Length: 530
Image 1: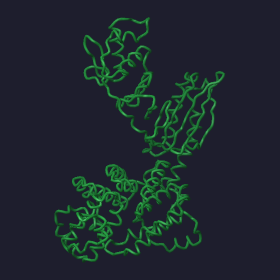
Image 2: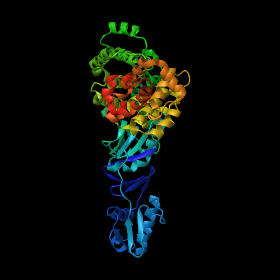
Image 3: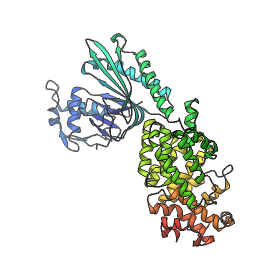
Image 4: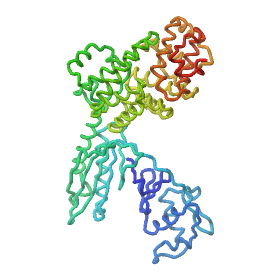
């Protein structure tokens, strides 16, 4: 269980969080409280960092009826250190100046953003504080019940008197407001879908004082409502694009993770899709399936066979027009939003910002990134945020259950990010981890070898022989294919050049500079062609 606090009212020192009034501290998720005099000393020290606080000055902070000796100040400081986990021999927080006093030596840090499927936030009316022990038991039961109902990789955060900040990323906020009236207790429950803050559940529960150490029934009532809403949200992320709505959620989530891959065989044939679209031309789901069929025609075909610039432009224009036309309807379906983002990013017609917005909002609504690992990484690559892209690709590579096609795709995308940013050592290690044995098509294995080999070194004899065997036209087509599917979407000309330089160098060694398509040479700059 992770405990969060209101970042606007607390100060962070690494993994230590101090309440504004030093009523409590949280370190590594464990909450500790302070006595009145401990609070006074801690507040005086922490509010004047790196300044010597003499014992005589600290005596002014404690209650007048307490021991007024320096030894009592030392006693209080030692108790504070113990609660903070501060080692007196190597202190992080309170340093001793022997014969003088103490110094608060810790430097405050920015609070880490909360990234969670759900935050359970509690708030107490002043008179309701007496049931905080029972409320804690209720929250613990909630955390356990909700956690058991979602996959283990989902984070659930518990917070007291907390509100989300601008940098926080949470999909749902469960707010428990404990109140009292005429010696009766109640809990007002609201569940919001974030970041829209739309209320999806709201009700009040009566809490009987004699039962407050347990609250089992109440916790079960809340957890059932929350799980229904959360599971519904996760289900929305895997509904659409032809996925069977009757299948279990986990099955649909698995399919949703690979349905957006260009190599997905379900998009190879468009005959049945065309018939269905003719019968329901306004159906957004069918429209985006059709767009993915068109997308697959440009990406699944052998890179050695030219689509033709005129035909490519026609197909991409149809993708663009169709996706934009059905974009309003996609707003109700996160999976369609992901599809729209992928398609608009791919056609590279000035829609990068729109694609990012769609993908970010779909991800925020669902909290389920398995359908978007590759897409989010590609969008980060396009902006030149390569380290973020690699993190997305690495998370995808951890999902061995998604099959060899997904693994090949996600690792190739990581190689593209590393090559674009010029990280050769990391690139070589990632290339070595790619399985290019059958059933990986031989032409994909060859393209990976030619693209990711160092441009300054010739290919191996076997790889050079394979490149020479395809002929100059096919080699030129391969360059064009790599550019349109992977390089042109990158905003940085230098990144585009880095990505294309290896393949171009290998082709030029065998066929000369005339094998480089003019459209590619103009787009990436002469330094990659030289």
